[in-house]
Length: 93
Image (cartoon, rainbow, N blue to C red; front, side, top):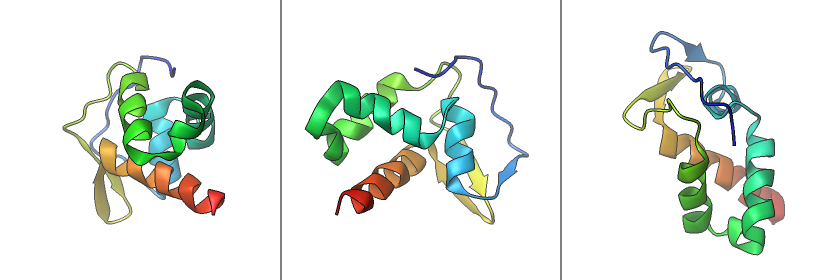
């Protein structure tokens, strides 16, 4: 699990979704997915299982009500976690 000292910065604009994920996860999206996959096994490749486990592993201080600016778009925590899942789902095909 990532370290629990995340502080949301509403002014920060990320250049890509991976940077936003790494900022609030406290680690890369790849490492985060690998931890979940180690715990869940094949179930990690089912979106509902992945998202549920992800929510339980988020560091303290991550606020689900905040949005993260990536370029000129805004994404919620669940949007970014779904993106992470979809990237791994594509790699598995």
